[in-house]
Amino acid sequence: MVQFSEVVNRARNAFNSEITKPLDFRVSQLKAFHKLLEENGDELVKAIRKDLKKPLTEALLAEVETTKNQIKGALYEIHKWIQPEQTETNIILIMDKTYIFPQPYGVVLILGAWNYPFLLISSPLIGAMAAGNCVIIKPSEKAPATAQALTKLFPQYLHEDCFQVVNGDVPETQALLKERFDYIFYTGSPAIGKKIREASNKYLTPVTLELGGKCPVYIDDEVDLDLAVKRIMWGKMLNLGQTCVAPDYILCSKKTEVRFIEIAKKTLEEFFGSNPEASPDLARIVNQQHFERIVNYLGCGKIAIGGDYNHKERYIGPTILTDVKETDPVMQDEIFGPVLPIITVNSPEEAIQFINKREKPLTLYLFTTNKTLLDKFLTSTSSGSMCVNDTMIHLSVDALPFGGVGMSGMGTYHGKYSFDTFSHKRSVLVRSNNCIGEYLGKSRYPPYSSTKIKLLKKILVKRPNLIPSFLPNLLIFLLGMATTLALKELFKIS
Image (tube, rainbow, N blue to C red):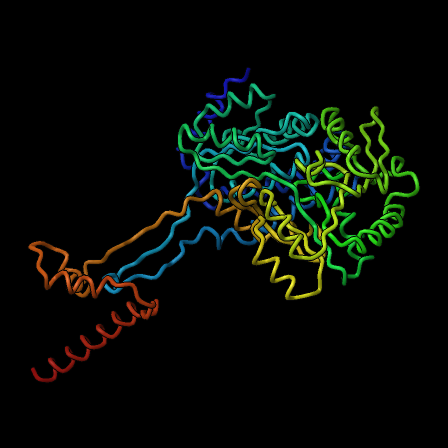
């Protein structure tokens, strides 16, 4: 087994040398990461496809090109991200400075997932790198080709002590979690997320847990159903449903269910032809264990579309189930495959009740053009994110934080939120020795008295910030002007 203490110590020594803190180093490593993708993108795509048999388009765009764009975004903005953030002060501190200084945590552990074996490592890595941390990267053992490619390529482009890749199965991961890290970032299932959280408690290590759950879709009767079906089935079949924000089940009226199935048959044939198994645009289930788990769901309710599968190829065809009961196995856990149950409800209120009886989802999908209905779902439900009239594409907007709530996760990332996740927000107060601030605050000194208490209560009471940020400088300027004028008059007299 790898001696993880040596790996962590190398990273710790590198961080303590302060090599990662200068902006120039962070920028150089981000550019090196981008160069890695420019020169080896094809190799990474090949590895991803070997692990999951992903379509070329999905492996290239959803993992490699997305990462390249995220790196570019960080390079565009990092100069702003690292700046101290000025804050408001109170009356006593009117002449002083207060600000928030973003500081790297130190040595970060990123635990990747198999369904997007490169993206779910690269995306948090960009934030950790931009924030000035050293990073230990543990790819998923269920995507060995991608893990091997990262192990080979990272040392060729990134600083070998600051950014290290380690590999192993469950025992190695458990051993790794016994080491002391300054931050842990995990993407995966809630069951493993709980174990990560427990392991982090030993050193009170902060964690981000990007988990999952059953992401519901509610379809209003009045929507353009042809368009809605196309967008839902695309989101469901991307990576063969092995995506944490894939639509997990549909809630709609019986009337909409009938129309949905009719349109879905045509849509799936347009996407994948009359024989989906032969389509180059459908991935495969990652391993036999997950394959068997999903095949068992085919016994729930009635199969309206699909239901075919191939053990040897780990292929399961796009499938829609009807007459599903909420107690059926397919409704107990996240499906993570190409099976889409439909449950009929009589009203939006019934759909909201159904959603709220379950754990909070990572994403909630709503198809409606009714503003009142949108507001109702927005205020009466809770989820990590919400996407209206489409699926999945909200992940492409890095100005939006991505993360779960409750059992679907804790913490957020993407864009500046990734930088913020891996930065400790250090609060700083710098006091001056001017007479104004000291005069206002002198009542804090003993001996105490009722008069001083009354004065301090008035000064410290919370009130709207009526002090513009420029006022201290303006006061200093006016004081300087007054002094200059006084000296001029003094010299005239003399």
